[in-house]
Amino acid sequence: MTSQEKNQLAITACKVRMGIVESTHAAKCGHPGGSLSAADMFTYLYFKELNVDPKNPKWEDRDRFVLSKGHTAPGLYSALALRGFFPVEDLLTLRKVGSYLQGHPNMNSVPGVDMSTGSLGQGISTACGMALAAKVKGKENRVYTLLGDGEIQEGQVWEACMFASHYKLDNLCVIIDNNGLQIDGDVAKVMSPYPIVDKLEAFGFHVQAIDGHDLDAIEAALNTAKTVKGKPSAIVMKTVKGKGVSFMENNAGWHGVAPNDAQYEQAMGELKTALAELEGK
Image 1 (cartoon, rainbow, N blue to C red):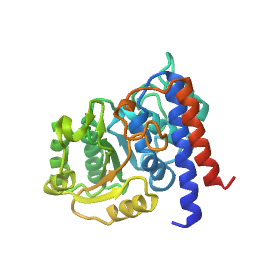
Image 2: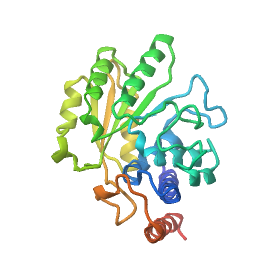
Image 3: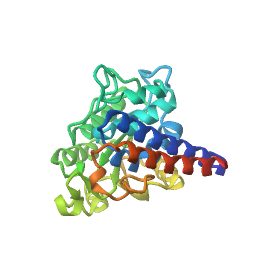
């Protein structure tokens, strides 16, 4: 991508992070940590990679995205809103009574959400089904799913991986957000999923390991995944939980806690400063 395109994506990723902070603060609950770690991938997917149409979210030939780690809905919602699927101001209704923006994605109420998720491990199984259905129908659309590294402690994830390899789902791209932390702490201490790359390769995947905050690396990995034939692809991205907000970074305590008023002001101040630098102001 050009330097101008990369800068614009970085600006958008910063705005996605601002939406995450604003929505969880307004809700007084939610999951900012893992939403922030995946913000760069959310941004690249919705603003460069996915063949989707905000004006026609149910378009049959669209690419599909399944947020398997459904608790990071604030990140997905922020990207969808900025992409034009629904008004950005609606982010402030997150988790409120009567809001269509529930704590976990609901495909029946949120434009652009392809699958209702939240029970960890189930999203990748659904993505496999979508990918197989596309092949059976002779469709060219691709399917992407994002999982947490704590989520891959679930046995169902590996059943799905076995399925994807068996049916040679080369239209499927599984993305692992390896931020190293889950609600109870270090994933390696809770129930180690390592070595993630070796395990996925053993299950028959083409695997790439990248820096999940490097937009060039994200682009290269997704482009490579599209060239792989005869086997599913996986991208293991090393990230920082809470990325972009200094006091949230690498802190498991921010897995599922919303910022209070003072923390909100600090977080937004940091993000606004970062945005101004990106915009050259």
